Structures are given as structure tokens and as C-alpha cells.
Length: 111
Image (cartoon, rainbow, N blue to C red; front, side):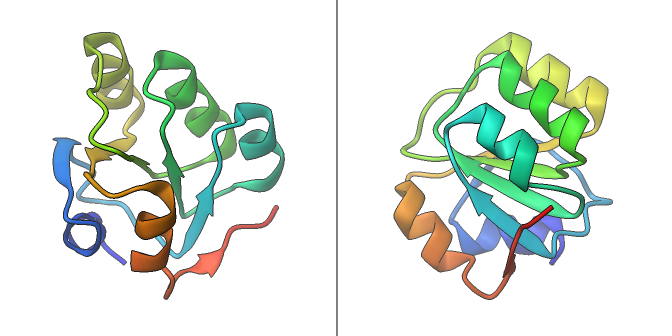
């Protein structure tokens, strides 16, 4: 799934584009240590964690995109880090559950 397709599926608003993203897996979690242990390459992270550490975890795990749920705002330092690291970032008004259902065609991410 492309980043554009991902954005459309969750009725998202692009904060940081990642036109090269190739998203085949999805993982929903707010516990970043859990994300590091179980989410990997070609994945999208579905979360409410709207802070800089979420991008650091994405960089370590090879995550290509992050969906920030419940319309939470993205702070400037998170946006800057996502741009620097090449991680696509978008927000959605959907809950984590609804965003996960919208992306159900993706495979669960497992490491």
C-alpha cells in the first residue's frame, strides 16, 4: 500500500509525506517498547503517541509510516524528526480501533 492509499483509508491528513513508503504490515500499540519488539520493516504504526520518541522507535524498527489517532496534534519536534528520518506521518480523526479496522487488509506486523 502506498502512503497516499494509507492516508485515504484512514481519512488522514498528511503531516510529513513519504511517497516512497511501501506499507505491507500494520501494528497498533502505544507502548513503544512493545513496538520495538514486534513491529518491523514495511509497517505502519497506529498509535496515539504524538511525541519525538515515537519517531526514534520507528527509525530503530524500520517503520515507514505513523498514523496518529483521535485527531491528536503533532508537535513541531516530532514533525522535524519525521522529516529528517524519512518517516511518513499523518493524523486521523479515527480511534485506534477504527484506524486498525480501516487497514485490516494489511498483514499484522511481526518481527
